[in-house]
Image (cartoon, rainbow, N blue to C red; front, side, top):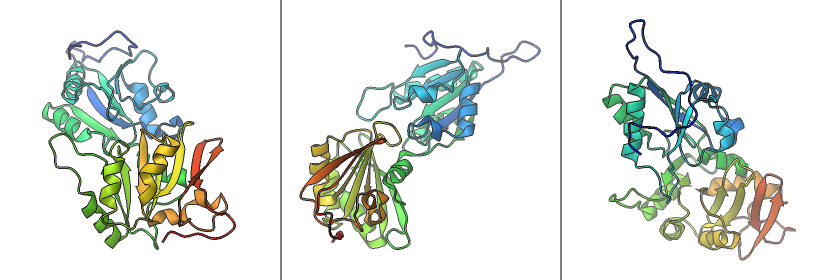
Length: 306
């Protein structure tokens, strides 16, 4: 598809012109669509979607979110799911600039928050370099929603003094993340690790983290946070990959690592006074809002991570 043309689809009101008939430049809005549940959209995001004449939409944005777009707006799906085919980033940036220059109100709709692993840095640079008016509307990032799904804070006065949000893999041509060094820093400073896009690299991540964190460090995985298909897994660092494979967890998932998981309400609701130490097996329990996988330890005593 040529960057100057758009496929026939929904069309909103025509771009504006001044009294002399001269086309007025449009604008671009980078909008966070949140983790998936449309009820978690901000009011500002909903208003922006309703005003947009063109929407460029990431793959993880569902139809329930898109229902807030104007009925006659153009909706262009550009992919952007980890490990899957998607529209080249440079093409997206060129399309945003061209449509804004044509007087369109362009919404670039991204899963989560546009400023957290959303490649908004490149898009902001391209738009500003082209002299296009641009606005950013934040959304709930999936790492925060994963914590909500687990019933656990990411910071805690006793267990976690800070949070590191990190991608599971580096961009092509860039140096890979030093997971061992990150683990040592997290252990020394009592930090919670929130890992995005880490499923395909889980084995390498696990091996690196084990060089700086105890094997019994609690780990949780949340797949499709906030959606009906949501699944949650509680494990330990040494059993992370095994338990993920047993329960078939895949992308899109968030991996949370750290002692803050000791405060997980998810474990308490299953009768644990605290978190289990040994995860030689796993048990599965299904709830109305997705599935939860918790350790199959004796539920008559109290358990703690080592």
